[in-house]
Image 1 (cartoon, rainbow, N blue to C red):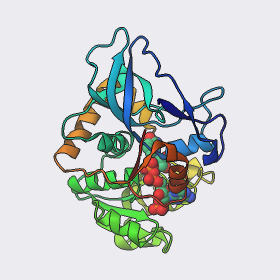
Image 2 (image 1 turned 180 degrees about the vertical axis):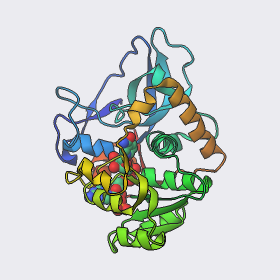
Image 3 (image 1 turned 60 degrees about the horizontal axis):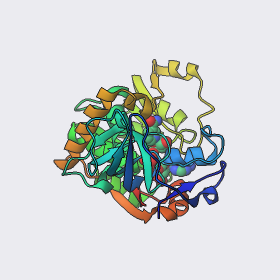
Image 4 (image 1 turned 90 degrees about the vertical axis):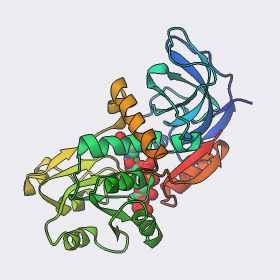
Amino acid sequence: MPYAIVAERPGGPEVLRPVDIAPPMPGQGEVLIRQTAVGLNFIDIYIRGGAYPWPVEKNLILGCEGAGVVEASGPGVTGFAEGDRVAYTVPNGAYATHRLVPAAMLVHLPGGVSDIQAAGSMLKGLTAHYLLNESYAARSGETVLFHAAAGGVGLLAGQWLAARGVHAIGTAGGAAKCSLARGNGYAETIDYRAEDFVTRTRELTDGAGVAAVYDSVGRDTVMGSLDCLQTFGTLVSFGQSSGPADDFRISHLARSSLRLQRPVLFHYTAARDWLHTAAADLFTAIADGTLSVHVAATRPLTEVAQAHDDLEGRKTTGSTVLIP
Ligand SMILES: NC(=O)c1ccc[n+]([C@@H]2O[C@H](COP(=O)([O-])OP(=O)(O)OC[C@H]3O[C@@H](n4cnc5c(N)ncnc54)[C@H](OP(=O)(O)O)[C@@H]3O)[C@@H](O)[C@H]2O)c1
């Protein structure tokens, strides 16, 4: 029976509840997908909890990443046929057995990439792609710091940084997460729940600091991240899993002529050429073994509330994939 997980208002995981749906008819330029795997992302938590704006009047289907099989195409769609394996990352609508996606936002899945790998990496892997190529393109031999290194984005970024010859330091909460990060490309790790990551980063770089910090933790780390940077270094602030960094002021960048970017994936994926090139890079890297997608948990989509609890409670590593 087709169903979706719907939230009527912002709140805790308990606002997520299943409702029966009729698979929608694709309109102009749209493709109907029968979904086989749906990715869980921290942005789902921000929207569900009200940290990010509620984008609809009432009932919202969360979820921004998925893979599946084309069931039907609307008028004007070319290049996609019934039975094609596809994947996407677009804001909201993914927590469902069936969904419509604009054909412009869909990519074909090659044989070397499974549906679960795609659902665990479209949003997170394309994020790692723009972070490491557009936000701050770290070069071989440079040292950078990446927070939440054992998370979904973090594990993919670590592998890509190592493949490029970058000396990546990763922070993570606890010894087990640090060990996992070291197995996924990070040359050094810092358990930032047990030791001061600024002091340790300075020690690891002989006082010089790092060329860039990729910071998705926000409130708990941003001010310290600035202190980890070398002169003319770059802070890439791309998330706020601990809350917004309200203490930050532009004048803080003056301490060593720092650069700052606050990027959003969907501004990159809106450009069709970028989406297709970056997805091709991602799938090639998965298929040739450069990237391993660490899907640490798969769960039925009906257990999404528990999955939210685990992600919000810092209990997860890598990607969580929900099966409709
Ligand atoms: N701007 C963009 O385009 C974009 C795109 C994708 C993702 N993101 C951001 O990137 C981050 C990673 O996303 P993800 O889906 O891969 O999640 P994730 O990294 O798998 O999970 C978030 C991790 O953040 C760490 N964390 C630190 N303080 C936390 C707190 N107070 N509460 C909860 N977690 C905390 C935890 O790792 P430890 O236990 O190791 O601290 C947790 O496992 C998120 O902030 C997300 O919003 C941004």
